Length: 314
Image (cartoon, rainbow, N blue to C red; front, side, top):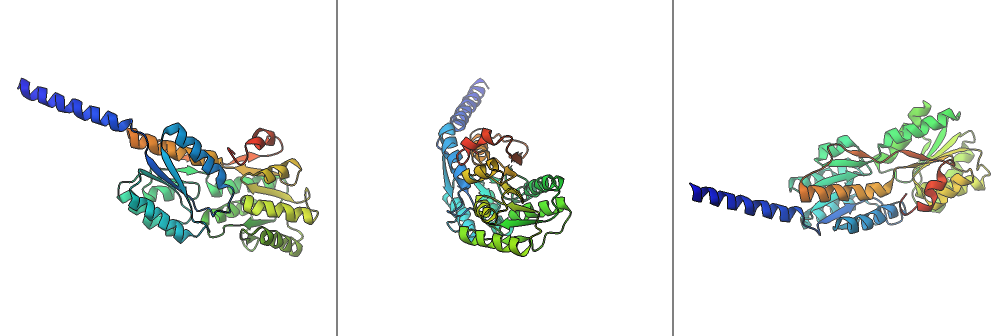
């Protein structure tokens, strides 16, 4: 009996030692998969967050994206990451229907997944992800619309530069609901070519001179819209809200062209999922709930606090 107990104890010690060794491993390989095309500068903050967090956590996280924003291409990237047997996948839910199969396949293989940025907590749960890190898009649009309504706005133009992403439509819908109007033709598919965005905004405002506000969904639509508004002499005259930050957006806030920018804190969206996956793979622990990184509102009152960090940490 003593010999058997000694053998069991020795085996338990070996198992514990092996587990501890695994728990403190470093060099885990993750993939952070975005829907953003190469031209979308907003994801530069995400890339910086990945670099910083890789160094902090001792892991390797590769940022991958479809160069043109093609979602079928994005789905293939998820499949490739899954086939490569990475230690974890971080992925935006740019379109649930397109990405459902590849993400569920990864989960079925035992690869932990954290969804981020686009999509909802409910969609993340249905996919079998550990959690979702991001901003509830409809609620963010609703909050923006409430600010505009308080300022007396009753009509608006939503400049949607990524209309194939359902989350972008939810931003416009939330804004419309806060104003108490139906979302219809005032949401335009602007594309991402700066000249085309600028021209489409000018054409809409010319045809609809009573438009009370402009809502843009990121730098790709905000920056050309700033130029359109200034060309038409409407800077400071038309209510202007946008999602996300850039140096040009910060300048628009400071000179009064833009009333507010919604900061969803992309640095956290880039960093937190890596931290979560690292702790889950090493120690089997993860937060019990999803994490909302926004919305926060940047205005003239607090722009000085974030301006120097825009494009890198904000």
